Length: 70
Image (tube, rainbow, N blue to C red; front, side, top):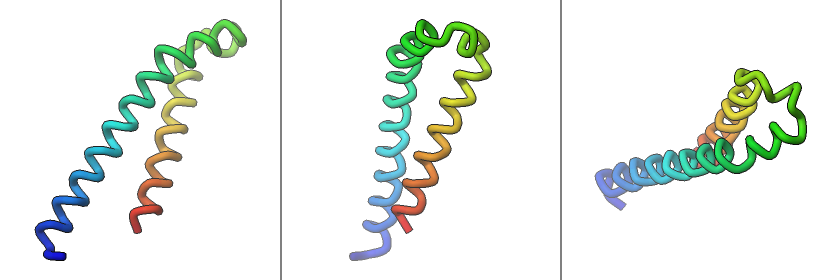
């Protein structure tokens, strides 16, 4: 496989992973987060806790994808 095709596939896969992470963030924000706020109102009333969990989840997913691509 030529270098150009390989680079194009890598860029496409990174874009696809970004798209999937964006969809996951949207689902978490609009579907999962309201359910968690109803279940644990004191903890999730502050926005930084929810965004912290979201950031941790995205960081873990990105690390797993990076390791998988090596």
